[in-house]
Image (cartoon, rainbow, N blue to C red):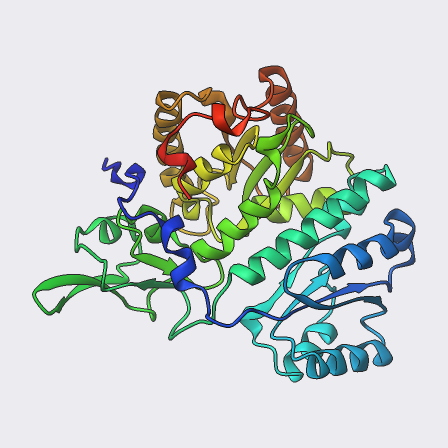
Length: 386
């Protein structure tokens, strides 16, 4: 099996973020829905509102009953009056009324994000301070994702930068849907995505060694922005410990996380979830960036064998992460800081068990050795290059 997916591009995805961001600064709006009385008792809503106002590029933030007619009118007026072009809604609504109001006000569907502060904060952390802190983190990550997202040019799914594509063919080997072919572009061949066949799993994007592929919705820029937010400040201190980042498949493990919240299963607040379309979308560079930013552990959760929505994406994930664990060991990390596991959407108890075990495992290993080291003493490596 070809393992070229682990190659770190000479011109890293991280190096191109500034070039691919939209030129104008985004104008974010954050709306915290207060229609659920129990949620209002589980979280410090006023704190969430004030915190949201402090976030970068946030032009408007308010806690209100979003599903009421008056609430939707306020949302529409706020978007128009403040020229908002990106919106975060917390928590994810159970109906489409709020989303419809946002869309009718002129916001692109690609620039609406949900911070699930109900199932992933209020319902799984009984301590109101812990729950509110997690809710703040979820809102900040959602806002960061929107800041990092860019307008979708052309069709959704995977896209190719023909200027940097080397024509190596790794993407065609990775794609199980025969959605990628090669075309002549001047003096060399480049990959071309047939969007009628593309299933938007992102496996080809994670496999591209030149960093020439990207995708809408789960772009490298958006995910890395989330990583930066949830690991902010970790290198300066060994607290809070542990901080664990979980990459969760939107079809399998992410729904299992929500289901755990619906059952009010108590969980340690030390982890944060980053949703991906498939575990095969998890780029090795994301994992290395997360660790180099000071996270104490990274857990990749996909669906069980035979249950992957994308024709064996979990198999590619397993192979890739097994090899990556050897790579990070050669860079001086304990390979046990990377975990890979499998859970289906109807298994919330298993999700909770996996997370609890991994948190306990990281507590036993101890903090990331890069945390709390004075800047002048930090090791020099490719991982630290900005």
